[in-house]
Amino acid sequence: MNARNGSRAARMRVAGGTTAGGVVAGLHCWIDGHDAHVQAAVWLLLAHEVWPRRGDFLRACVNRSPDGEWWIDFPAARTAYEHGEFDAASSTELAVLDLAIALGTDRFRFRAMGPGNARAIATAVAHAVGADR
Image (cartoon, rainbow, N blue to C red; front, side, top):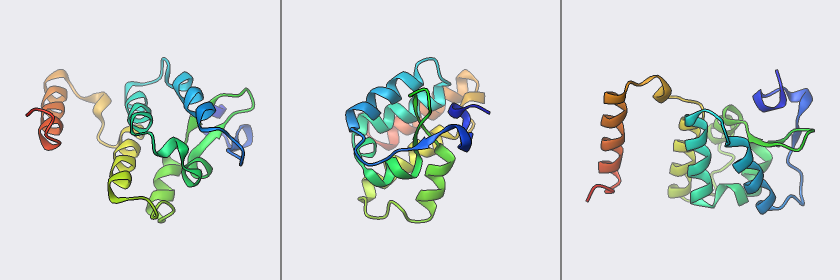
């Protein structure tokens, strides 16, 4: 198992003094060529702009491998979320993080959906958030 996939021996937790810009740039590099569900999760977090700048999030689940690659440990993010480590965040921030974690772990098996189901899901979500109005 390599650092990208979660080997604890081959990674380092984010330490104090890490710049948000460095993490953001590193995450952009990490998702290049990654699975679509991971790309979507990271894009959501980066577009929201809150989580890549929060120290509690960085310490809980953002990692840097010895070769300098940044990555998010989505199962660790879920564990921290469920244990209330992010409870100081607003309800909207928590909702965005919850969705990003679900995407990053492929909780809903989106990558296995056929085109018809994928379109139906995208349409339903767009409607739920009012994006189709």
